[in-house]
Amino acid sequence: MEVLRTYKHQPYLEKRFSTQKSVLNVAPVFLKTPSRIEAMLCLYFIALMLVSLIERRIRLDMKKAHIERLPLRPGRMQTKAPTWRTIMDSFHGVHLASIERSGRVIQTTLKGLTALRQQVLALLKVPIDIYTSLRDGWWRFALE
Figure 1 (cartoon, rainbow, N blue to C red):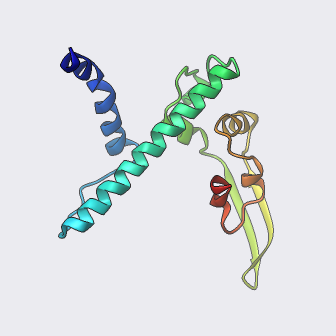
Figure 2 (cartoon, rainbow, N blue to C red):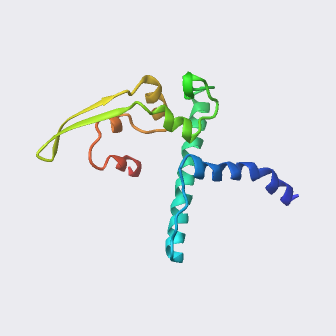
Figure 3 (cartoon, rainbow, N blue to C red):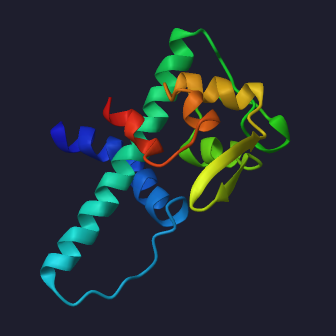
C-alpha cells in the first residue's frame, strides 16, 4: 500500500524537477570535487524549496482571501494555482531607476507596480515599501 501511495505522488516530484530545469534554468555544470557537487545540489534544493514555498503561500492566502483566480497568465488569463513562473512573469515591466551622485543614491523612481502586482505582493506578504524604497540590503525584510 505504501508503494502505491509513493507511486501516486511521483508526478508532483517530477514537476518539481522540471521546475529546476525550466524555471530555474539549471544547466549542466562540470564540478571536480565532491564538496562542490554537494554545495551545488544544496543550492538547487534551496531554490526548489523557495519556489515551492512561494507557490504554497500565494495559494493559501488566495484561499483565505476568497480569491478564486488571478489574471497572471499572458493576456490576463486567469489562474487558480499560480506557479513561480506565472508570478515571476507577471512582474515583467516593473522598472527601478536610481540616480546616484558621488556614490550616493539621490533619487529612486519605480514604474509599473500595478494594482495586480501589489495584490500579489500582499498575498506573498512582501511589504510594498520594499519596492518603493529599495536600498542596499533590501532583502533583509525576510529576516525580520
